[in-house]
Figure 1 (tube, rainbow, N blue to C red):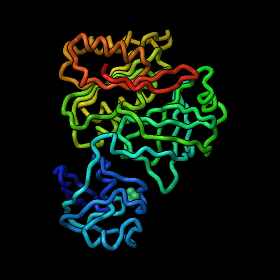
Figure 2 (figure 1 turned 135 degrees about the vertical axis):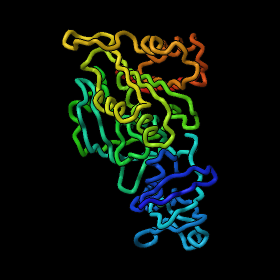
Figure 3 (figure 1 turned 180 degrees about the vertical axis):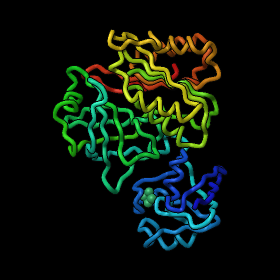
Figure 4 (figure 1 turned 120 degrees about the vertical axis):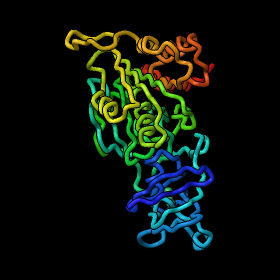
Length: 347
Ligand code: FES
């Protein structure tokens, strides 16, 4: 059975399954409810029930007091609907509203995606969850005080693990370790979320998303978030890599395309090998975008990848009349000792 929920003051609406918490349903629909532990302890997910009823399915969680309960307050991470509801909650709309945390994380899974890209799934302590906006990044804190930035490749509603795509950098101490000695169950420390590269949910404009190499990672989070939300709009993903062996999660993206008619995908190879027998798009990824779209002014453009790719694409799109406020960048440097994000403004 499903129940209808109206969220105030936004007047957003969603359907919630009777066996789903209100917070889970809100995140699954792409609404940014505040939360912390997701275990009923911290009180961060508190909001008010204006009409209707909920069920905690057990004892009242310890993160809410008698007075708060009498005042109609509810912990949405523990509350299941038992009728249609009208609720009040402060939906998070900007990254400044999200608390940056420093947390230990355990490496739960490690999987090689290509010859030089590793997927890591990091598990937070049981009592913690990391709130973030789709497309943001975290820093991995190293023992000597240095840090390495990696985009979050999962969407906020799917936050059991934090997913990172790590490219092996020749001479890069941390990525050497990831590829060689880092074992599952190892402990790392992280800080985040950071960054202003995230999905602008208030926009209704169609999206073009351009990823170079592991620049696909934050775009994956953004697309998965957009697909989970009810606000579907056309999106075209362009992935630029050197050769066929560098493309990853290609089958998953093709699956999106089959399932959702508003998703398009163009992989672009700059130097395909003979084995690739490539008959698809060739050259630089931004050139392929310009080939397919003579007019880009009505689009939101998200670009993520090496600085040279981002800068070249941005300059080319500006020349086509795309306004700076409609371009969003996540630019990162792969150099061995300076592996860090360069958050670029629209200068
Ligand atoms: S998120 Fe901590 S109590 Fe709900």
